[in-house]
Amino acid sequence: MRTSLLRHLAPALLVVMWSSGFVGATFAAPVAPATTTLLWRYVVAAPLMVLAVLALGRRYGPRYLRREAVLGALGQAGYLYGVFRAVEEGLPAGTAALLASLQPALVAVVLSRFGQRGGRRQAAGLAIGFAGVALAVGPDAVAGAGAAGALWALGGMLSLSAAAVLGDLWPAPEEHGVLDSLAVQGVVALGFFLVVALASGQAAPPADPTFWLAVAWLVGLAFLGGYGMYLYVQRTRGPVAVSTWLYLTPAVSAAWAWAMFGERLPLLTVAGFVVSLAGVLVARPARPGSGPVQGSPRTAAALTDW
Image 1 (cartoon, one colour):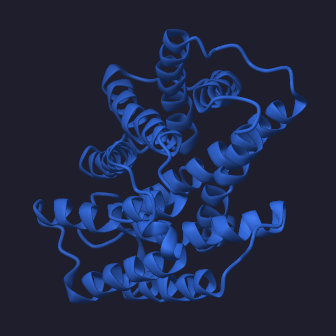
Image 2 (spheres, helix red, strand yellow):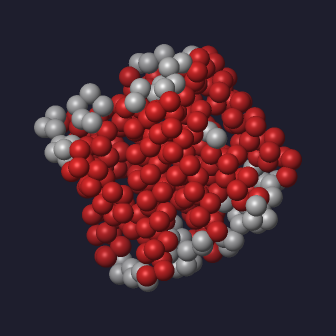
């Protein structure tokens, strides 16, 4: 019963938690560079995950470690570094969100080359969802889009897309679940951001307590909640489904900003959320409770691996 409830709630939790990363980044931005924030997110998160898997007596073979190291480098380090660098280059958040929203279509196209075809319904849903994102981000999507920032954002999107595709085509042993992935991938991301922070002289954390509030937020909600739910939805519903749900995150991020910081919530953003939700519902399998998406190598055993 608990697994069934989690399966049904997971997409909504994914959208809310993934979007919460905006709040943590906003908290930290005035007091620390993005590289410092990302480093300390993993300085806190990775040891917690390692302690958890050690307490549970988990053991990993070389093949599993290789798989998770590659996925961690792409899905966490590469994606986050690309997005944060895009913002530092001055790319508007709406433009970054629009570029990131190319991911579901890209994942679907790549997987179609491996025989996993979604049909006209999925294609229509992806198109509707992208239109909703464009509506939600509004004029910000076409304003001030510098070439360097756009390239960083595209690089981050491609990195997360590659992780989604590889995670589906390179299945993990069924005895390893989301907690195991978070632990191994968190260590890989920690190593990456440690090297980047030391090389740029941005490893030292600021003394401002706001920074540590941001780190706690990013670890608890964005990493454990957001990325944990991303992995869970990917395992139980497939890579195209998890990518498609991310269509809703720009509008929900705007709602977070409205609730937490009093930022304006335009009517176009609300309308974009509704359109994106319609696209997600159209793109989903006809029987979402029946298991992973058609063509995915996942099995029903993935439902119990949380």
